[in-house]
Length: 124
Image (tube, rainbow, N blue to C red):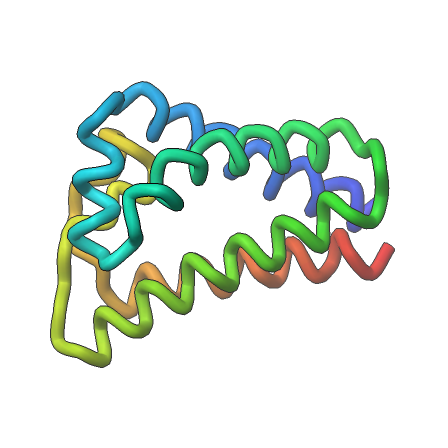
């Protein structure tokens, strides 16, 4: 039951994050480039988030969506940490226009919670 709750919670977070990025239109890839993400990757990230999140939330194809979610959040966290270590604090837009604050160690802490949810979902 706990794994199901973790999977649904993380799945919904990914769907909201991805949909919010899609809603930004061309502003999202520009925002992602300030984080050092290549445009070719940035344009597919929202769709990957929505897809992985939806499949994870509905509980099909287990355990692959949980593994994909963990990899996604780990990659996002790595991008944030690299920027912070380099002294850069661009706006994340992690949740599209819903998040307009610069990245910080709180972003890393939030992602650690999301990673924990993914690992709980994966362990089921």
